[in-house]
Length: 335
Image 1: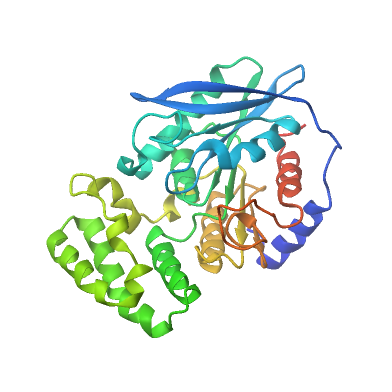
Image 2: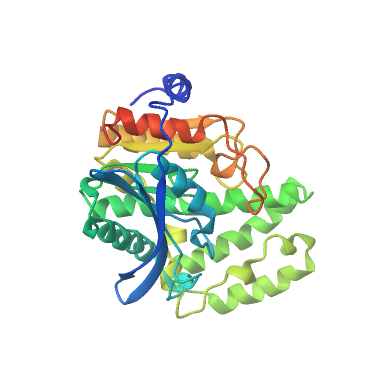
């Protein structure tokens, strides 16, 4: 596996190589397909060109994410000659189901259903279908790669590597500090977060946890560390256990296709240093020559450079999409 210094140098060289100056016309259409018993809605963008094209499934981040946030990314892929499918999470937009009742495996299954849909359409080269995911999907991508050994490539944007437990603690601490609280407030709140994680992992101590959350309301920091707002029902707790227990290391080590990971060094929601190291360690075992981990020191979540309000229009780090396209050419996906 390349050192971080060589990775950053290679990233700089890739950003300077935009490849062929193409901007193909694209065709857009809404589609529906099934993930098990659940119907999912999405939008498929295809390049308006003859011949067989590669394709990519675009996997959303955490929460009630619709396809809307990924449509511009999908258009950019299609304009470069890669068919792209963006979909609504379960229970959002045109998709049935309920994302709050999905496990990590369920999230991976939804993406797998989209890949199978892509394989059925004419004009797609089934040997060049890959997956792209952001944020929470950084954990679903390695699981998806275990389910589909024929994936041609994987691109992960500011996700995975670190465990979900590590990311949760890192995120809550940063939210408190950003809101003006002190480190001492985080140290006071942290045992409650750990108690919540223990409940997710085991299903034990629910009533004690609820009492602790209620008692914490007297602390000002409880408005930021609002665990009542993310508490699953007792019936659904098992679907959430992975947030407290999942370690992606073994799944990453089994990713034998080319993998590109792009992380924001100033990401307030994920510890990019830990994430980069874990991705590097796992991919070194996986051993594909095209594996690449890039850290953009001044970029935040989603490789954005205009702050961390994820509802505002994104401004990306220079070369964000160009690096992805150049890497896909290096990996032989784009020809």
